[in-house]
Structure formats: C-alpha cells, structure tokens
Amino acid sequence: MNEEKINLLKDKLKSFEIEYADATGTPQLVVKKENVVSVGEILKSDEDFKFDMLIDEFGVDKFTKNERFEVIVSLWSEKHKDRIFLKIKLDTKNPVMPTLTGVWKSANFNERETYDMFGIIFEGHPDMRRIYMPENFEYHPLRKDFPLMGIPSSLDLPKK
Amino acid sequence: MSQQIFDKLKSNDPEIKQSKLLKSLESDDMAKHFDDPLDNEMVMNMGPQHPATHGVLRLLLRLDGETVVKALTEIGYLHRGYEKIAESCNYHEFIPHTDRLDYLQPVANNVGYTLAVEKLLGIEITERCKYIRTICCELGRLESHLVAVGSMVMDLGAITPFIWTFREREKIQDILDIVTGVRFTTSYTRIGGVAQDITPEAIAAIKKFIDEFPGNLKDTRAILDRNRIFIERTQGIGYMSKEDLLQWGASGPVLRAGGVERDLRKDDPYLIYDKVDFRVPVYTDSDVLARYYVRIEEMLESVKILRQCIEKIPEGPVRTIEPKQVLPGKQKIYTKMEELIYDFMLINFGITPPVGEAYQGIESSKGELGFYLISDGSGHPFRLKIRSPSFTNIQTIPVMLHNCMISDIVAILGSLDPVMGEADK
Image (tube, rainbow over all chains, first blue to last red; front, side):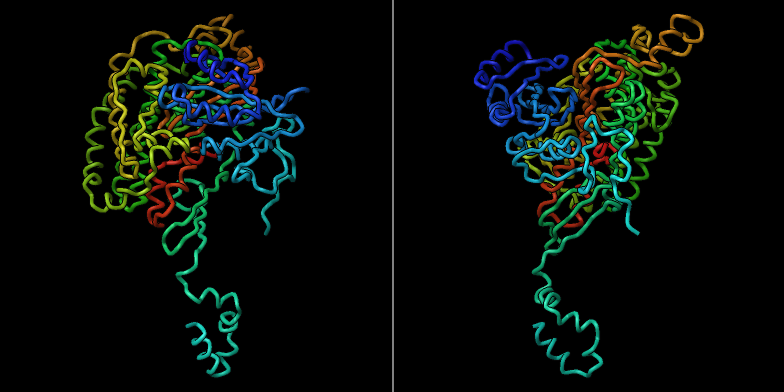
C-alpha cells in the first residue's frame, strides 16, 4: 500500500478516530471496538480498497497492568492485491468485541479459536464454542498467566 | 401400516408376545421410527479415525437417506499448542516445530517461518540462499501435490496412481536427503541462511528428477484424465461459487480452481518468484475435477521453476554475514575465536529482534501459510500466530457438502487436501 492510498484511507475513515501504525511495511489501523464492524464494512465494500478476504483474526495477550487483550485482523484485497491489519484493543476484565462474521464469514473459525485460546467473547457469533480444547476445559491456554506445563487435572482422563 | 403388523404379532402365540424385540417395538419411541423409515433424518459421525479424512478430522453429518442435509466439522484432535510452545522457545528453537505443521512439505514451512523472522530482524539473505530456498519450496510443493492427487484418487478407488505418485514422492525425498541431510523432518533453514550449501551432486539429482518427472506424471494422467469413472465422480462435485470462496477465506488450489487468480508468488512476491517465469493455472469450474487439474498443472509449473533455478543459481555464500543475528556455521566456530563467542551468545540467549510486529505469508501447496510475529525485544517471540491454509479451507467443507451424497464426501475431502497437523497446530 502506497502513501497516497493510506491518505485516501485516512480521509474515508476520518469519522472513526483511527490511529495508524505500521507492522514492518504493512499498515495497521488501531480501531475502537465499537466501530470495528462499520470500519470493516467500509473496507470491504469501498471500490478503492475492496478488502474482500479476511485472512486471519487472532488475539494477543499483552499482559501489562493497563492493557491486556488485543485482537488483530488481517485483511487482503483480491482486486488491489493489498494487505492491511486492524488492531482492536479490548478491556482487561471483560474482553468482549462484536463479531466480524457478519462482514466476512471466514471469521467464524478464527473467532472460535480466539475465544478458545484467550477467552475473548465475540458478541453475535453464530457458534461460540471452543474449537481445539474440549468444552469442559475451564482455562484459556494462550493467556500469559496459563503455565506452559498446563494445569494438572484440568482435563478429565477417559472413563473406563 | 405398522399398527397392522403390531396387531398381527399380538394375536400370535405367547412366546412372541413376550419377546424383547416386540416389547421395544411397542414402546412409543420405536413405533415413531417405524412409521416411515425414509422420513427421518439420521445423524452420522464420520471420523476422526476415518481413512478418507486424511488425519483426524471429524465430520458430523445430518443425512436424509444418502444426501447430506447439514454437515459440521470438528477439529482439535491433533492440537499440540505450537503457538504456546513458541512463546517459550527462542527463534531458532522453533524451526524443528514448523516441520510438524504441514508434514507433507516440511521444507516450505521452514522457509515461511524463517522469512517471517528475517522480516522482523530486517535481514537481507544472500542471492544463492534465495535460490536454494525457492528450490526447496518447489520440491515441497511437488511433494505435497503428489500426495494430494494420489490419495484423492485412492479414496475414489484407484490404487495405481497412488503408488505411482508415491514413487515420485520417494524420489523427491531422496533429493531432500542429499540437500538437507534428512528425508522427512528437514529443519533445513536457519535464520539468515540455510543449514548447508547445496552440492553439485544435489543439483544433478534434481536435474535428473525434473527431466523424468513430466513423463512419469503423464502416466498417471493417462489413467485419470479420460477415465469415465473418475470424471463422473468428480465433475460438478463440491461446487462452491467464487464469491463464497472469497467470503469463506479459501486459498491455494481450491481458490484457483474457482476462478480467482490469487497466488502470493505473483501477488506479493518473496524469494525470487518475481525473477522466474511461470504461469498460475486457473480454472473456473470450482469442482473436484478442476482442483485436480490445478494441482497437476501447478506441478508442471513447479518443474519449470526448478529448471530455471538450477540454470540461474549464482555462486556465493549461503549465509548472511550478520554476526549478532546469524549463526556463523560449524567450520568457523571450530577455527575462529570471534565466531565461537557469537555462536555461544546466540545459542544461549537467542536472537533479539527489535520491538515490533511482522507478517510474512508464503504460497504453500495448500494456500497462504503465514506467520505473524510479535516481538517485545526479548529472545523469545512474544506471540507467534500461524495462519494455516488447511484451517481456513476446512471451513468451506460444510458449504461444499451441502446436498451432496455420502460417497462424494471422500472426493471433496481429497480435493481440499487438508493436513490436520497444520489445521490443529
């Protein structure tokens, strides 16, 4: 994405209070969680950007005092062959964000994975179940406070 | 109807009257089932141990007769928590783990991961190294596509092509044995280079292989391309529209068979893909047969790329000289003091990239394989996210399975070619 296009993007999204960052050559937009669905819809439908593929969506646990959970969304425009990242910062105590499955259906599995691994809840998701871990598992393993060795007896052994 | 049978049975002798079967038939629940057996939908469980699911993928199917009404995929049976492990490894230590992601083409995973780390570090690798890595990526693609084609047609009932494609795959593994020193779990790349230089012997072996391979592939194609059984079982099966494929995030041959020309080798070039001449095969039918053709043609393109790489490969070092980030190599450690110190520091404390985030996606044989790295300046990745193509492609299964027959399921799964090691991470 060139400079000109980023300026155009800034112009189109100026009503949403977006911060701009850079992830080694790829633009990264820091979006507020209330706006993420509307920003997503604009990015997807606008002819100048046309980000029609959601490549990935995943969580990050910052594990600092003031900020903890973040969700990063990776988008690809098939028409313009461009890549962009969205970053959404979430509450520490109550990590909830609106789902993106309404905009890109492929967010489905990725959001389930993020829920499974970080406990981030996506409001309005059609199938909010764990994807890797069993349903009765209580913890969220990719959180930084989950030990690498696991928690003994957190998983039931198979019954005889 | 069932009531009449019940009455008939009731009038018979007391032995029948007291039988367990009759008692259960008379209970309300069972009577409901027997009213019209075709009226009911059945839930069937396919996998995780089914041979056609290529690993441990579980499908839950709601069937109406033999037609799939609704399907649900369950994954996670091979979840090993690699993203968690990565947070406690240093950057080099994670390379062997990438072998176990997509175990059909371990070399390409190595390359993808190291490219991401190099992007984070800002290292430029040498020209010869780029060529070697491209050769490895293409060998990996051949390796993986051969399994994909072979196992798909085996699921459809043809054993011969499976044996033939595995014979070719075996030759590739012999080449990898010469190039990397290992047949299977290669761990060949190093950050800033590769483990060892490619030898003239290896180049000769690759040359011999690519001279023979198109002819051998022709044999496989001769059995399949005009085979009526094969075509009838694959044509029009597993259709998914172009819009749906984009919406569900499919990538790789699945997407290209649906008429979308998305190949990261062309769209977002890495290594030397912008310098070699090749074509991206695209079909518009978006069915199992189209995916088969895309894979076959991609293999021939890979051979083309390999030939160009072998002709053009320049002389020079294979590792960047960047003592604080790149391992110096064994020869230098044994003979030079400075290098020994750097090696000690690198092994004990690891590479420390600057604080930042980097993403590198490569076009693996199954689609976009990406690594998103977040560094906090320490020796371990703060977060490593693996974007695996199989994980996302599995999402399309329920859409493709809608209204197909049970026997088509194996064809569709084979055409998607999911590898669970990668999908479950």
